[in-house]
Length: 116
Image (spheres, one colour):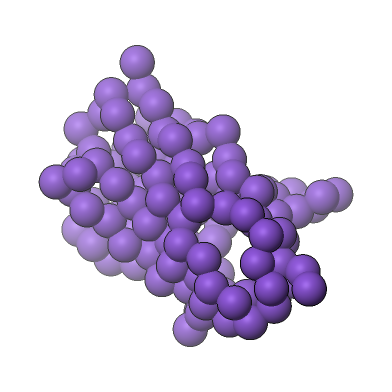
């Protein structure tokens, strides 16, 4: 049974930081590209950041220089360090595991709210 479990969301002030974590089980983690997506109310889900099995990374333009994605294959974990948060970063953040787009899994999401 595949599980992706996100944690670390919550309420944070503008300019603040938060780190999201995603614990994966039931997959050969090191073979999967891992990503973070987000969905704000009334908007489509969008890619935030992705890290491949070879540790290449890619970011949405809106988060470049502020967010950092990383993975720990020994722990089956992927992280998203989010700095300089803005109100427009408010969304539900989802962890994603992708094996060549042929097999894709999603977590249930964690809410991040950026507000004073």
